[in-house]
Image (tube, rainbow, N blue to C red; front, side, top):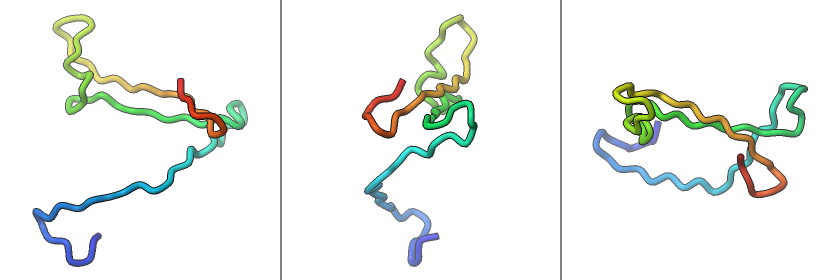
Length: 71
């Protein structure tokens, strides 16, 4: 809810800071994970590996809160 916003209004959102949330699973203590989905609306959906089958893809990646990397 944005006070005073009406249908058709354009809103600008600035993310000022973000931190990864550590995994709650004891097997992955100290690690953080992220994911992205390539569904029918996503870029990779039409990137056919086995034509003509379109596919949805979920990518899960590990991040390191102390360094600046993800894999």
